Image (cartoon, rainbow, N blue to C red):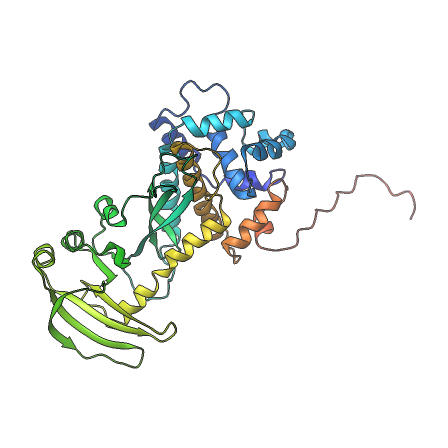
Length: 388
């Protein structure tokens, strides 16, 4: 099936090219483009992510070395530094954002039955953000501090498979709470957030949308206890209470009852006070759910270490967003390949193998499953033997 095809070409075969063309047509991405199409741009940037290229000149040099193979790898235009830089600056980043969401939908269906440490049927999301520091003189649009620039990645992570469901890319000054206004809340789902998202008016809108949230309280949190429920103190639970808020504005913004759970984490020697609108799950399950929030922190750490999203090939806002969305597409693509080929290797191991073997012509399943590949034996010619 993969005879004569490079690993890069086999990897790109997992992409739905019809959906990509729909995304391009939606924003007229190939309007007045003669040779270097959006697909060529995507392949070049995906190659840069997979091989950890450091600059546009680096991408150009590496791809031109393999010029005889580029046509069979899907490239139709000549890859040059200026052409790629212009494409990143001018072509709408929403093309690649929409295509990334197509891949995300595919990955979520593949990982729908994946376990994340807590036995629940509901969909569980972790919401958080991370900052990518930038030079303010080179990225003047990325406002953050007086002499410092940055962009923020606000990410809603599906804990089943650690798939980023939604990503909002903003400049560094945007407060995390504002993202809750743009969030399309899924009824019945559980949203795990840190106390940076503690805003009772927005949480009440989430409650009215029939969704559940789990978050932490702040230090000057005022409440009135209505009931106390018995808890098993052996795993670290200290109290489970039904409360209402005190204060004019908090009580006005969230008039319903809330659940307050205090948990002592013996590993970190830290007491955690949780707030939720879910009264049906056991208190220990709520505490375990909040511990799973750290998966989004691990996701941020992983993509910063293993994808090119800390150093950028262009300085415009469009170029930065294009690079980030293509990096997310590569991450989700590798996750899809892992699931469809039933591979046991981690995403990190798969990326390391791909980075040094993209031009090899061996079956991708054998390359990524860590099985020694042997060249097929040469077929003997149909001739009589000279000596018996």
